[in-house]
Image (cartoon, rainbow over all chains, first blue to last red; front, side, top):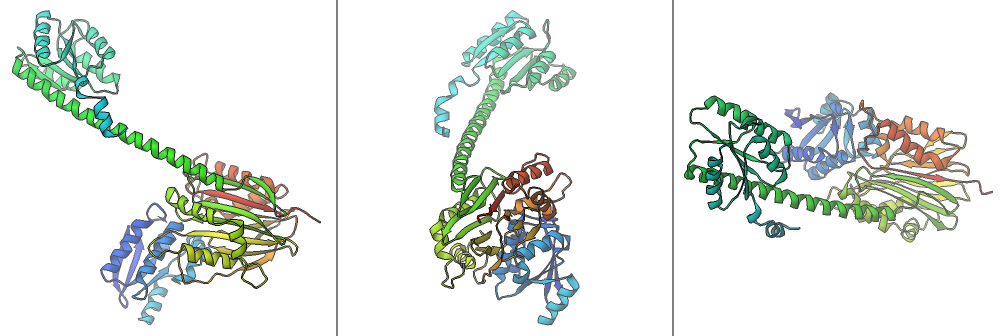
Amino acid sequence: MIKALPGIGEGICVIEPRLERLTAANATGFRDELLALLEKGEDRLLVDMSGVEFVDSSGIGAMVGVLKRIGNRGEIAICGLSGSVQKMFGITRMDRVFAVYRDRDTAIAAMNERA
Amino acid sequence: MDARQIAISKGDEALGRIVIVADDDAVQRMYTSAILRKLGFEPLEAGDGVSALELLRNTAAQLLICDLDMPRMDGHELARQIRADNAERYVHILMVTGRDQRRERERALESGVDDFMAKPLDTASLTARVRSVTRLLRHEQLLADRNAAVAAAKERIEEDIRAAANAQRRLLPEPHRTTGGCTFHSAFVPSNILSGDMFAYYDLGDGLTGFYAADVAGHGVHASLLSVALGHLMTADYFRSQINDGSGVPAPHALVAALNRRFHDPDSHDYFTMFCGVIDRAADRLHYCQAGYPSPIIVSREGDLDHVGDGGFPVGLIDTITYEQGQTAFPQGHSLMLVSDGAHEAENAEGRAFEDSRIADCVRRAAREPSHIPQRLVAALTEWRAGRPLDDDLSVLVCERRNER
């Protein structure tokens, strides 16, 4: 349910979730696919949420699960939040837990600088 | 009933013993019946299609051996009628035809016949066909028994879940109650039988009233277990002891931090959002800690609305965070309404969410009668969903501050 675009900028792997809604129905599968990327050595993830219209609490749980697994070994950033997804990230303060950027280019630029 | 009991109670002996033999030739019928009897079956004879159909409908027979040409109803029509009956059991139809009736056989397959035997009928081929049908019947019976066992297990699980739902409901306060100088009104609508929502309120003494609402991520049995654990933990005594951080000001953030320590488990993905409030009635102030739960609305009798808080970290998700608390005026004559995100996220048939604005409208319209807010909101959501059940649990808690002075 994701499309992974590895090798962007300084070892960044951009992830496009191929879903409009990240909910209890698919959150576990989504998390497992991201964790599989980590296993393959992709430890700089940028999740572009611009195609995602809705995230529920299980979706948030899945993303935090990935964040915890990465720990200090790498990073996970998020971009393209809008509408109710942005609100969800605000009300749960996930916009302070994750590095959140307006769009993909801004995120990649900032992540390259950190590399 | 477990699988072994089923096997004992429904033994093999009754299975497919009755066989209907339909033929207008009495000699042929007697001959076929004799062979079947020798094989241990119980043949019932019919001289035409109509009486064969009647026998099938009135017995438990699952095998029919029939001729093609018969008076009143031929083999084709008989097969069609049997298939149209659509009974629980499957009737296997063996048709006896001439050796070169290929086109008739094709027609017969379309009518619902399973297999053919050529005339003249001989003992060996009849025995082989009947044994093969018996094997199928035995297999069908095995599947039917398994289905019955699964249905029984499902029934037992659902009964357990209903019992758990009753236990969960008993943890929740009644829909309307006055305590600690405030009147509380609530509604609780699980999306499944069980819910991941929990809420409560308490008179804490010293002019303080406490309340909380929590929503466990996910829903169903898994979420409800955590919500019930939380409901049991959050007694008035626990609440009172945890909000006292020695500062002299009620500290709901200390309570939320204690819950975060208690419920954070590095090996689990379970967490919940909550809003936890303490009303200092003499000061007309609300001290609160918002932990990812939607912002409550404070509404005056005149319908002026105020959203409280702008977010906060959920509970049990991350162990290294610090919780903040806020405070706001909560005067007498005002009411505070908390609703779980099941309301905001509820989508209508076109996929549009109910959202803040519609919740606010609902609250504004019921501002003069705060006791009606929960049911009005539930009714508005039911209409929005056009009767379809909600995808997520819904709970509404209203705290009404009546004029005391």
